[in-house]
Length: 413
Image 1 (cartoon, rainbow, N blue to C red):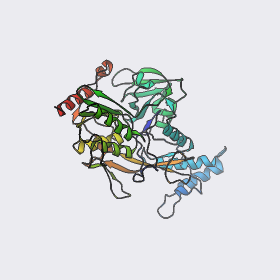
Image 2: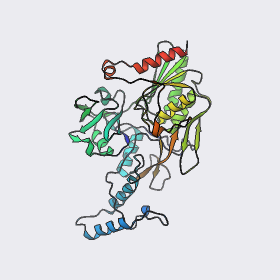
Image 3: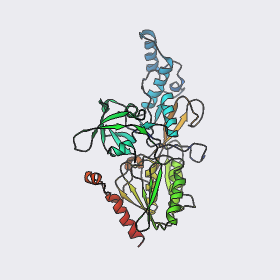
Image 4: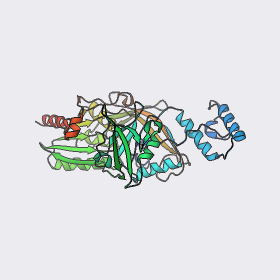
């Protein structure tokens, strides 16, 4: 199984390119598709791998194709061979986030953008060679069934997950609304437990907020979508009008989303300063700075993170921490700090919902926090590390939130 993360149901997606020209790179933490067959066969006229000069040596591939065409006792689908070659060329890079999306996978990505997928509501990925739940989504069938971040999915409908790619696993978990999927769940040192979950349409708001006791505003960001920054701004305005004197920002189990959204949300809490640095071997280092005009720049901030906080969540948490605007509470974040750009292969330069046919999602850079932390290698470490235990989960208690409330109250004394 290849190491990557993928949303098994709902969309965690990039801002359409037309929105902001300043950010060409698309940050996708968990929507990572692999072509079904990684067949490294090559047509003799397949130009992708036959570049002049220092291009890929295609002698072996041409020989394989020649032998197949002469000896294979069966029908040959030339289009599938070409797509297999493209998929194999991309897979050979060894980067789980650089992937070739065939037409079917591209359609799934478009459906993700529209929020039209049905499933159980989890983000999945590979950790230590095992299919692992990165984040269950609040209020979804998976959440109601008690699945947690860090749970290992040993089998799906009786099929050993170690025999499946991420795509294959996700496709087995997804399905029509009202149908059941059977998962074998392993949690820590506990005995495996079989869980049957009924699929449903997954549609979760990206931002929720409320007032806590002691004039403390609480904002939870579930994903960094196209409208998330505006929703955070509205939440901040509402909470301040209700008398909020400090803010708790909950990024736990948030697998990421748009870069622009992370920068704009950071700007709601800091009026100036570096948010994140984009470093690439192919281009000059780019700095993304906070924009003036934020609604909560005058309030102390406590940020909650855990192992399900990834990508844009890590950018935001790292920026607020490094700029002295927030104290971090919880657990070390996931560690996904690479930037993907999606290129439509039908002639359109960048991905959009109108792109049909195959696309290529390619890693173009990596993110570093203002203090130079490589997010992919190090993740984001909280100043106050607290882990939730099984007893906490079972009792419904939340010591991480309680610590954040204590710190917020101290800030406004």
